[in-house]
Length: 460
Ligand SMILES: [Fe+2]
Ligand SMILES: [Fe+2]
Image (tube, rainbow, N blue to C red; front, side, top):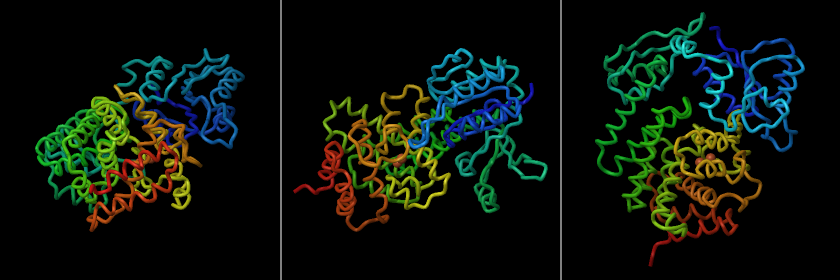
């Protein structure tokens, strides 16, 4: 079978990237991606031929621009040109020509792949050869966690004629830390494994990380080790989406975080530990939110002990996923349109920041057994109900859990701005609260601020 040529029309750049990567991975497809129906229509009119078209229902990204009825425009064009190209629409869609298209109501990568297989009438044999030549990259730091690779490991050499992959380690050969360091010094950032070895490699990585989680004893050690699995699992989730192995790792990471929270009673001890910047900022940020939330939730009068345990579980999930697409520390710290304006971001950074809440909510919807409402809290975690950008003015019209999360998150951000060991932690925490008091005047937000205030006010 020849390479599949797919035309993708996705108004959101980041989602477009995500789908493109997924199509390359699943079908080794050649993907041409546009953001508007106009660009796509022009190409089709020039006579360019595709095996399949995949398009969003319509664009809803910008309030000022008129809506681009992507699916409708393309369907009309296909009809006019008498083209029979299989067509898949992402998002709900009603149209007289609907019967000519397959519709995936939600943006789920697995669902899209399933529809492609159906639309193109693909057979299993058609895939076998697609799986072979593909190399999957893993950051070098993951190999520090694996002493013996469960498969061959390659490095990539960029040649004029194209990339070449050279085997560096054979199955079972052990790594020395020194060797890995040497590669790092040479500027090598990634190793590669064959796509077919992916599950095997993930399992080895998973078992190794689990082992180190089991071996650790104190809460403080647990926090450090969970930091590694947090970074690795979120990188896998970002890069490869939801697979059985990445799910197992995320589950385990969240579980360790939660278990430690339920045991810990010394808030200030853990806060101090999280100020230690040897661990990644995104992990410390997510973990601190969980830690503060677990202390504050019982004060919110949101139900019995059992219900609160469920709420904490949700907050841990939200905290893990909400900023998963923001890799850069600088972006994680921005929580308003003004801060964004002043941060001098590139177009690409701005785009990912504006869309990250929406994007994470979409990703998390593919998570099996997702606790109810988690996707909505993630979508609203900057105070806008569609998950795009930041609000002009705060509104009480979002979920109470999203309001709770917003305030707690901003408090966590302020705490992480402290020096590693502040002279007086309690006083610093009270200072961190001052800007929140000014910002959050609406009663539903105010309630959270007040509870934080009680928390950081020394009892007489
Ligand atoms: Fe965040
Ligand atoms: Fe965020």
